[in-house]
Length: 180
Image (cartoon, rainbow, N blue to C red; front, side):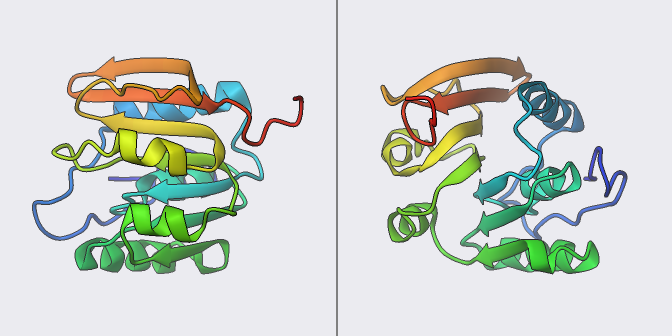
């Protein structure tokens, strides 16, 4: 695993120890970030990386100009990998790791608004219907084993499939919308 582009390009990331996480392929991650770049949303963004694992999405966002990332990961192995990656890359002042479950974090931080939320749950999990209403962001990037079914409060922006990776970028209806 590595950072694909930006200030930290080609820097290696360590994955969490154990079989519970699966790294996203470079091809799928590059596709996600190409889509985000075409939308012009990364520069100075406040980002939330749910089910963060190694922190690949949030770290890539920082490398490409995001301002700050909150990482949410409940597993000890994930938190250890995150802390190592953040420290090694010198990102401590631009990020914070929260060792807590996703729903607990979202309910406890309901007033926090993010520009982009990455949601990459373990393939065996299907948390979408439970967390769509809890996410306070203008843009959501979802990565899952199966196609993601949107809640009524979200509109599809882009959707791609790479092997077992189903990627969805969705825009919240109303949240963070300065135009109405």
